[in-house]
Image (cartoon, rainbow, N blue to C red; front, side, top):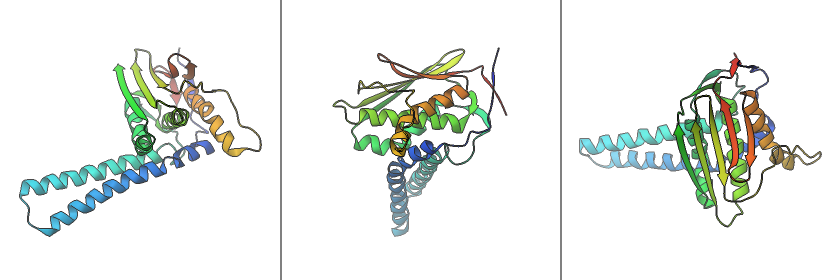
Length: 232
């Protein structure tokens, strides 16, 4: 038997906005790089005549930069841009890679390696895309913060597709256990935001009939069932 959820009340929480704001520097850096490449190609095309094939190559590169910039901006604004109530087919592998993209500059600067692997049937599931984007953003943000001071800095994300569910396993080299149940401390808004991020991610998972759990050997596990029905 499937359960139903109501999408009302799915507006982003304050920690969702703060989490997205912390990605702005990384996204701005990458978008500026793409804009710089576009400008350089445009200037080259103005300077002299080019072989048609070379001109086409530069135009293709310009369009690739435009598409990548649009994807980065979408990845940053999608979780918080508006109240998310629409149920659609959501590709979790695509969402994970998008979250990786908006953190890529920060990961590079902090010398954190991140490996993503998809196994099994990772076909889309019916879900509210904005809420799952928020959950993934919060989990990855928490994982990056936990591994940043570690001597060895690595993160692994395994997406495992099964017949009845999709599981996402987040492992990091810090060895530090996250606290999924820790709530906000009165009078300390910044600490409250940091402490409540995984609790918020778990709420997004439970909204979809899933859960977020932790095992010291394998890491954080986000499991989302395929059969859960959400009322539109």
